[in-house]
Image (cartoon, rainbow, N blue to C red):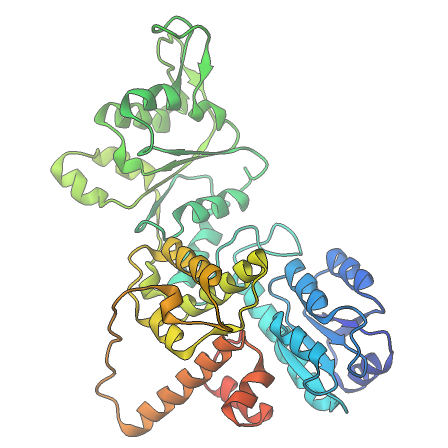
Length: 448
């Protein structure tokens, strides 16, 4: 991205643009859109660092919820700042749709510039931390996470994707191993080729060989014509072998030969078939333990694991749990057309204290169920149905440290309940938006 930071201004009036141009420091440029269709066209043509939507004296000419939703849908990293008359209905709808902040008239342009600059900085940080993009409008895969374990995953993916070597993805069930494989494929030189996925544990052993390697006509009863296997179908692209630890010793030998020679022998075939495919394998099993027991070949392990990528369990990803829970809440409340404002404080505690044995897959199922069954404005622990969990007690900290930790946690929970809206969170906490903004900076809290 260039050093010039483009800011989109959606307003039927030139006043907001004039004020921002007057107060913003060098390094920013502005795209002015009088209508929502114009704004969306500009966003499709070029990535912007921030967006300002002017609701024009409390009126709602664009549809506040629609404007924020459409802009956010085009670019999930883009923060939208809304200008309105106080907490008018249109402004609240914009906040509910995910606006980053709400400014009241008369506008203090110096303060507005500070928020827009912060939004642009957050945009830059998110883009730099994400390994790569397929287009200017967003990431090529649905992996999110600000925690250090996930940042390490992104770093490894970014380095290994362009290098045409086998990758072994390890991790518990539901940690996103297939998403990681998809990301590596999309960021590689093979992205225009096929991504062939096969679950080695979901196909009976007596059928898996023919599914992987194919067969020639007449090789067995019922083989009326030649059938290409899944490995051959991955030629020019990527072969993703999920649950590779389930392969039988016989198929382990055949897979090893393919990795060594880049060729396969279909069942009943006499001549090898050359296949140019990158292999990414994944498993939730302890392959090293299986090697010691003699159930998995050591030479195959090293052939598959030229690079090993370990996906962290959800319980080790800290605040990512709340970030993903919020993202899933927005997704399913929109999909089901159910208006849910956020999570209750008790629900946030439950999300944080639960051990998540099913990882991301379990989190998605729990949030989906909670949105579908929620009867109030907030999701409660009862809606999540997480079962009995005990939150770890905080010990060994002095009074000052404990107080600071409590303040940070209170702010995080309030922002989560209010979908990251700073103004609405400040009202609930009973402090000014300016003071809350300083606390967010002080505690390094991410609002999206």
